Every structure is written in C-alpha cells, then in structure tokens.
Length: 276
Image (cartoon, rainbow, N blue to C red):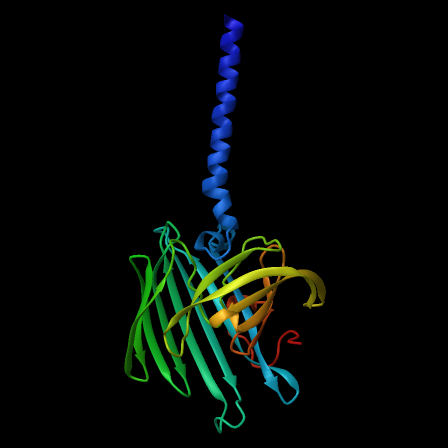
C-alpha cells in the first residue's frame, strides 16, 4: 500500500511538472518565436534597447549615405512599452526637385502590457509635404486619421489581429526572433506620405553570406512583398538570431546597420559602414 502511494505521488508530481512545462511552452515561449508580433519584438533583452541604420541612396559614386533611421524600445514602469523611431535623410532626386529633398520622420507606438498596440503617432516634415496622423486599435482594426499638407485624411482602416506589429519608419522590420527558412508572416505598414495603412508579406527564403563591419555572417535572406499579387518586392539580410544587418526597402532606399555612438548622439553626415 505504501509503495503504491509512493508511485501515485511520483506520477502525480511528474504529471503536474509536465503540464506546467507544456503550459509555459505554449503561453510564454512559443509566442516569442512568432515573427510579426509585439510579443516576439519586446523580449526581456529589448526592454531598453535601440538600433540604428544608415540610409543609402544611388548617387554619382554609387550608394551614398543620405541619413539614418534609429529606433528605441523603452520599457515603462506601468509595464507598457513605447517604440520610438526617428528617421532623417536628404535625398537628391534628379529631374524632380532642384534641391535635395529633406525627410524628417517621427513615429511613436505605445504597446500595452499584454503586447497589443494602443496608439500610433506619425509626424512627417519634408520638402514636398507635411503629414500628421494618429492611429488606434478599434474593434480589431487599426484606424488612422490625420492631415497631409493641411488636408484631412481618413479615417483609414486595416485589420490588425491581436498582438500584430504595425511597422514604424520606412521598414516593416522592427526586430525579429530567431529565424528558420520557410517562416512567413505579415505586418501592417502606415505610409507616412498618405497615412494609409497597408499590409506587406514577409518570407524567410534561404541562407546568404553578408559582410558587415569586417565580419562575414551567414544571414537569412528575407523577401518583403507588397501590392497586388506581391508585385513590389524588397529584401533584407538578417542573422539567425534576428539582427537585421541590411535591408533594401520598397522605397528604393538601402538600410545598413550601424554601431550607435557613445551617448547615442546623432549620427554624422559622412558615410558609416559599407552600403554596397
């Protein structure tokens, strides 16, 4: 009888432990490896985290550095997150404008403690136009309204499932979990020039080598598709751990990861890193 009781206790303990582990895997670990979700972006390692990329555009001497984009992930005391992106660039567009076009973009998203978008703010100050917009999650939809050159725009709506990312800046890649070939997901993107939200599809294709900061990386190639039937496409090179080293955006810009200077001061105007 005593032996049988011991066996029951051991089996019961084992069952409870296994149930706990399975529950933890389903609720805590698994969502952190689903790309395109705030749960996968806002890990403990990124509670107070930032990245910066130089912006490159074709010029007379090949790709020339024309600005930078920087995103800061800030964890607040109330368990909310704010994700703040600043993008500054001056791009020469031959035959369109006499002087280089200046872009000053500021996008801030507030994320709730259960990893859902609460609100999104977009401010664009550029040579051709100025835009200001606010986005909120309403009944499962991202609703954006604002003004472009003083004219009211919206409300525009786009379905945004619980916990899905709304991209910031000129890239749909905020941050990524560890990757493997064959992964597919989507992200909502708000066009800073029109304030219209749309969806892009992303897929991890294969391994490709990339030289960054003098070191060779065996990165994953990600294809980003947009428009009817994925007519428009762009590419990104990401380490297996999810670090985006280089990206060719849908706007024709090339983004290359840069090391953030001491104190996080503004990047210098001269090129930093290799944009080729």
